[in-house]
Image 1: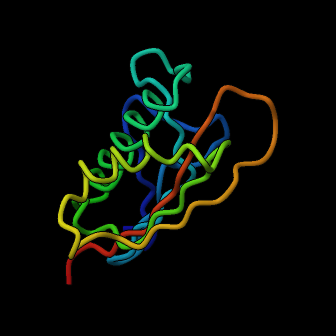
Image 2: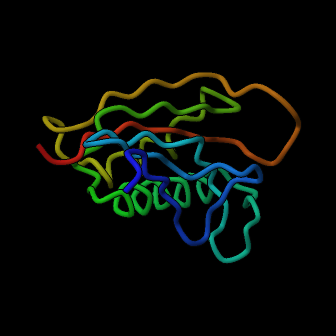
Length: 129
C-alpha cells in the first residue's frame, strides 16, 4: 500500500490530473476547492451558491479521507471581493457552530482572471490519533 493516498470525490474534480486532497498518516491536505455545482460541473453565478457548494465539497473530501469536519484545523479562503464575507461566514457557522471548537481561518484576495469563481478554499485536517 502506498504511503500517500489520493482522495477523490464525486461531483468535483480538477481540470489538471491532481486529486481533491492527499493523505499521509493522519494528515489530510486539500487542493483548491471551488464552489462548482456537483450536478452540472459549472460555477453558479452567486457567491451564496458557490459558498454552499464549496463547503459541501470540503465536507465530502474530509469524509472521503476518513475524517469529519471536526478534524479540520485550518482553512484558507480566497475571495474575489474580501468585503463579501457574509456568505462564507454563514456556511462557516453552519459547519462549525461551536465557537470554542472552530478551525483557524484566513481570508486572502483571489487573483487572476475574469472567470466566474468568486471564492475558493483549501484546508488541512488531522484525522484520528
